[in-house]
Amino acid sequence: MPIYKRISSNLLISNAKEKAEADRQIAGLRIKTPTRGALASSLSGGNQQKIVIAKWLATAPKVIILDEPTKGIDIGSKAAVHGFMAELVAQGLSVIMVSSELPEILGMSDRIVVMREGLVAAVFDNKGLDAETLVRTAAGIVA
Image 1 (cartoon, helix red, strand yellow):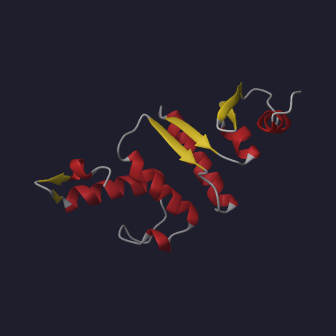
Image 2 (cartoon, helix red, strand yellow):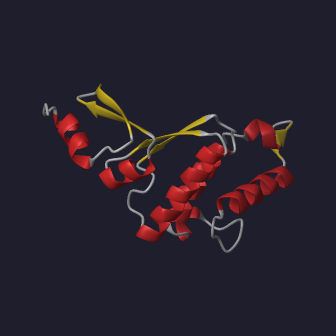
């Protein structure tokens, strides 16, 4: 639905445009699926995550916000999602990742914003930053 106007004319969805966009996203994100029409629920967690991301990437955004993008998926799928996020950044897309996993935050971020009680507590460039500093800042503990 986010790209309805682009793949429809006269209020009817063009099957050819819809299939072409699906094929483009499947190839671009390397979504592992037996067929284009397979239900998302029949795919692995990592591929389900990619489908959700593909839906919004089809809108050609400049910024994408990923909230807990690897929550509940296996380690191999996490690595694939991280690689995919790095590719998006390399293509010029700004990625805002919300995560509660410190290793993921430290491993994937250029800049880290720590929030406490709904407010920005600190902003760090991720150079030599450690988990202890982030936890202390999030907890409001002065060093």
